[in-house]
Structures are given as structure tokens and as C-alpha cells.
Image (cartoon, rainbow, N blue to C red; front, side):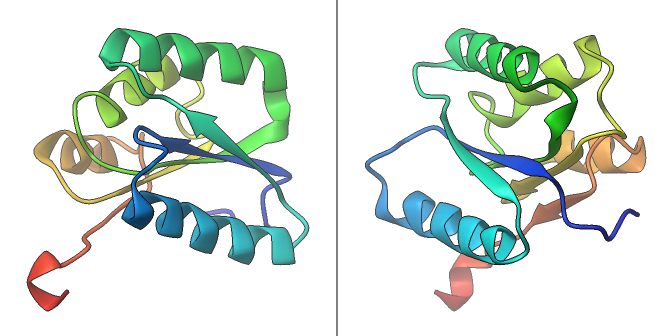
Length: 126
């Protein structure tokens, strides 16, 4: 795995008003900006179809500068559309893709090398 900090990263968030998701985004942003990475907060609210369109538009607009992508959750309205775009645009493996939470789709994508990690939030410890 590439350990060089990405030039540019995106944090895809599906509920901008959610305090917990915004805290995840702030933590992601703080760590990467400290290393010189430009971090974009990408609003992917509006359902799966809209999220897919927004991720595709973002990747098209930013091109090869995007080297990391984080979805705020592993749910069908965020993670699944993003993964579909990554496959369609053939950027799996080039862009480091991580998601918060876990799901079977993410585990399968990790096994295939399309996603590098799914972070379990361990809600029973919160």
C-alpha cells in the first residue's frame, strides 16, 4: 500500500447536519491537511442515484489529483454508488478508498482489492 500522503482527498458525507459524521470528516481532514493534502467535503445526500452522479462529477472534475476517498458510512446510498463509480471509471486501486462502518459489500470489495479498509465504529463501546 502507498504510504505517501495523497495530494487530494475527498470525504463523501450523506447527511451534512449529522454531528457524528461531521466529526469523522473533521478528524479525516485534520490529519490529512497536516500532511499537506487538500481535502474536499463532498455532499452526497439525496439518495443512491444522486450520490452516484455527484461522485462521478467530482472525480471527472478533479481528475488524477484525487488519490484518497472516504465515505462517511457503509450504506447503500453512499458506499455502493461510490464503489460503482470507482469500478465504472476504472479507478479502483489508483484511488485509496476507505469507508466508515462495515458491511458485506465492503468486505467483498476489500477482498477484491477495490477498497483498502472499512473502519468498524464499535457502537457497543460508545
